[in-house]
Image (cartoon, rainbow, N blue to C red; front, side, top):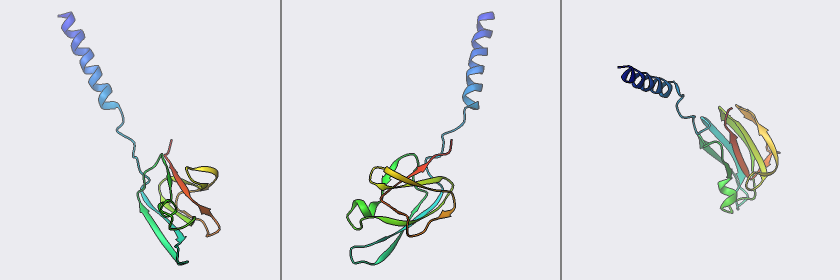
Length: 118
């Protein structure tokens, strides 16, 4: 009987621990990230990402495809801090764009990273 009680106590404790563990952390910056770029014809274009993934570095799609040399005027309307870089692969100096912050056209970048909250 004592052995059965110990097994039951262990099982109930394990279940309680499992239920107390927080769920998965969101893997996206909720909101919108907007920026501008100049296309190959010299026309200003605007781009928008909705709830972009966080925790990884991304090169700006239009730069990677050769449609432009850089993006500018980052507009971070998400719930996470954005870092923009002037070199592909999130290398080189970075500019930090806070939550709900719009920076001017003088901020040029080719890669970005949404920093997950601690």
